[in-house]
Image (cartoon, rainbow, N blue to C red; front, top):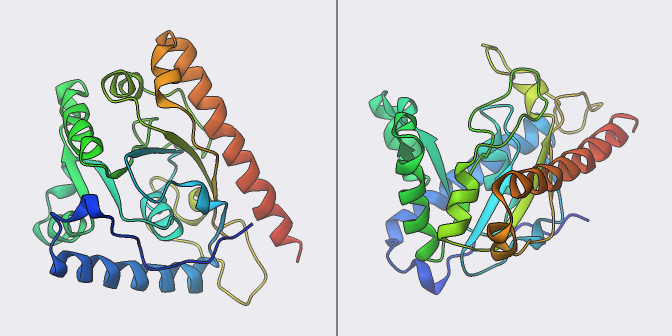
Length: 239
């Protein structure tokens, strides 16, 4: 169920990344992994489903600021993220998240800014994480996907991996100033985080569907992984 974690893979397609970039990314990876393991006993299901090489689009549900690191430390290759431009206002925080592959996008540009960045990354053979709901949800439940993800697939029909995250909302919900924990070695709580990965889906197949049908299909694929993650999370609370 849980594939062993290794150093994030750096493929031949990532030769544009310097040795210093790789070193810093891996330092951040191991620090974040250690913290989330100690504080949330984070687990993953079938992270091996993410292709080790080539372009891939990962679509997780989005309920918490913990979602990006939860995906980043459970998949086994270097990942890139689109993040709203407002997160880059603080100079220190901006420098930090840029150093771990966050790409600023202007949401006021009707999504075209994000699509252009996404195409560039995917054409460079990267693994790209996009939160298709567009923003965090208040109640932890999924909302309708934004149409930009379908437009992206029409321009760049790469494999799509649905991802479901459970526990992140309970750990750090939207609007909360203080996180809740589920520490390693103690009885699990609702804040225990689980990330579930589904089998890759043909992006060309999704791109060929009418937009509403494709979005519903992607929503159902991600929802299935959310359900899978929640089942494991609930079973661990009984231990």
